[in-house]
Length: 428
Image (tube, rainbow, N blue to C red; front, side, top):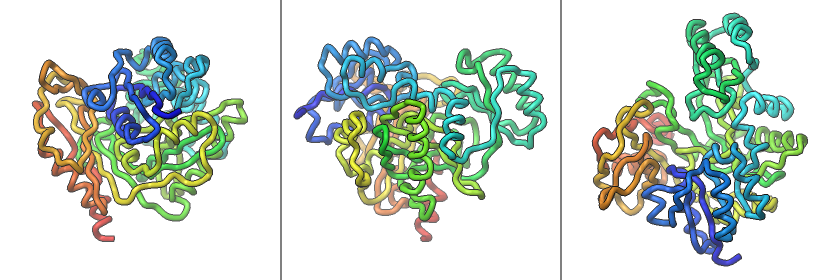
């Protein structure tokens, strides 16, 4: 399969990072991205098909005789893109729809965790609002209420008191603001601690962990304001004992993969566990069926192995038993967003200063497009600037030095990505 033709599905910074890493493979000939963005257009041929048009993607991939499809976002996975591609004998890196339920149904994921013996928050699931309210008002606050399905990151409420819980129950089960995704409501205990992102390549049986990462979800410094898709991330987080990547993979990822196999589900692709490091030990907050964003932008640059070969091995059930290799140093990514994000925001703002970014920094595009000869904003999250260094403090300083060179009307970003951890790193 020399000179493979590879299609990356998606349009965000995660997909730009996939394209960038795949282009480094000696196995890969041509790379396409559907639909892509202005950043992927510089490295690949963008294909004007949205990620949710799963039938069109499957037909296009078959017609072009694509050797490998790499699926970035969760929506096409939940819609069954992998099933359509594999039925056409197109090798695809990503789980089928039945396995993608680990993200598309929180209640289903909780059942898998119970079967696997994986520690998670206590919970109950409801379709009836009166039953949900009776249960919720008897709990110790805060509590967490989650729409069962995919809600574009907006279906989770941390209720500090019963009144907040009552409003969330009404929104999900009575007013139906999340549609089919809110047919069920999961109510669970609040977990307190530091968050951690654990990723593994999975081939149906084997699970190989990647570098541990930590992201920053809230829009404002000091973890203030509403949750977003992620405002920055760093990797690795060097933890020891039961908290190192291999031990976490052995106690969480592999049992979950086995539990799905026991249900007749063959999970292949990236499995992502969002963890909370509580005083009682690590507990799973949620599972995702894909690589995280913005974590992908710091984890993929640390990958020492050939991504195309790993993706093919996972897709065909042939991952090696040896650990995935990692490059030295740290990566710190800072997301530049549009003013107003995650609420209402404007697009079409000209982006200036990218030519001033130094060659050792990485800039992954998310919400960007070309407007004649101008590069302009085209989404809520616009760019991720990634710095590198021998220490986290150096990587962080490198990222922010290059962030300062980029500007557009309304630009917003957090000033404290990895600040606390970098300070600890310097002291250590």
